[in-house]
Length: 83
Image 1 (cartoon, rainbow, N blue to C red):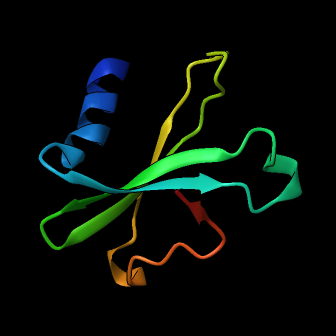
Image 2 (spheres, rainbow, N blue to C red):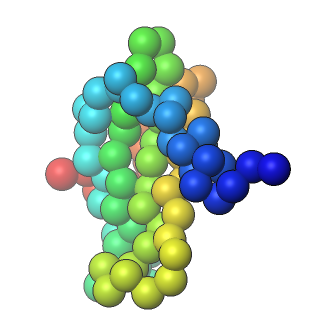
């Protein structure tokens, strides 16, 4: 049986060796102005991944890193304010 720790290691290990190439701050919705979604773009080989941190700054709850393969989207992040 796969443990939670192994599940998360498997989920994230595809990013190992990649390079962070862009920071994302999503404050595009008024609701998120005071607590925007934060993340970054990782390039690994020919693939690009958008990683969004889905945990609040206070650390309430377990949290999760959302990883989305955006290779076929042309690396566009419409709606994001990149800094």
